[in-house]
Length: 309
Image 1 (cartoon, one colour):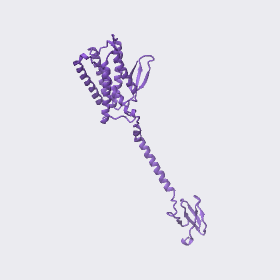
Image 2 (cartoon, rainbow, N blue to C red):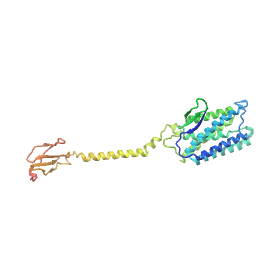
Image 3 (cartoon, one colour):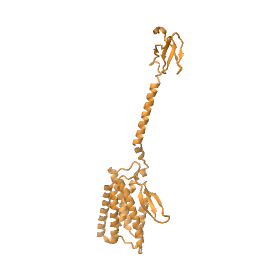
Image 4 (cartoon, rainbow, N blue to C red):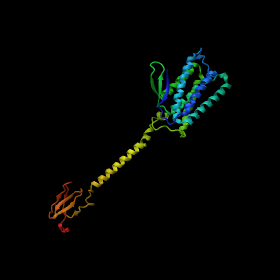
């Protein structure tokens, strides 16, 4: 047997009301045991037999650990007010059910309180955190810890609760456990539909897992770090284009013509090549002179067009 004790959900809120609500629910549970307002445990399946109190103790220990783990995790995700509202709804529905059961007691439609509350919380947790892990501890040899995915843990709890209810003869508890489990899923679905809660960008809900969608990719692409890196890349490309435009001349000979410059020395002409290199050509020369930088041949202008000193 193992006991859960923690879930690795992203803490959106500090679960103060979950801490306060946990001892209240445990107190109500043990008060029902003290006042004997608990379904009978005197049969195994359809065989009438006295069930040991050890079975009830192990069931309570397991249930209290599940309530602590899933309750705190759910409160961290939806917030204290929405969590407490859901607990009040569950307790209110149970009170209505008990009132109806008292009226039709001949049918023995008794439901276990702790199972009712936990299944309502488990259904809500399954929708929000199916991929998060539950840390557990084995209370039998080899006494070590291990982790289980939230989806499989909730499925295991639901199956174990139904089988144990059948084992103890709580047949109506099986039906209503599934009903309140579905109510928990419906409650979270309504909160998501009304945008009262939103999942963390790195988390997927149960519906997204079933659809095999990855909305975190969209959040990642619009994150601050990615947008900042994109801006840096764009700025780098702009600077590179600007440097190329300033260093590389226009290759269109029709738009840019060679502009002769007065010689810096006597009998020399300084001519600016299209590559930006200044080429010195003797004033009396009529031959094309290659540019030492790009190799382009430059035709010197006629000397009659300039007053060379």
